Image (cartoon, rainbow, N blue to C red; front, side, top):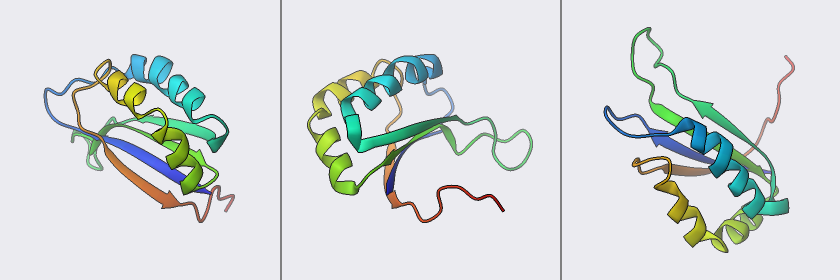
Length: 108
């Protein structure tokens, strides 16, 4: 199992429409990724570690997927549609990381 993280670095004055991202873009992504995506999460950055500091990321999402190959194949088929929708919610260049999930949920 892998996780594809898409992170949007905080920048003063940058535009990010959280409602559009949450309600339109992410459901579209789930539909486009299909069976390759088991589920996704969306985070809204609110602060850095110290009170009153800016978050490192204004937003991030994580797609939990069956494999790197399945994620890349599914997302690759729809790159034009995905990229064209980004302008609807942000002017921030995202940072992407693909990770192997080694612990999905800790009960300890």
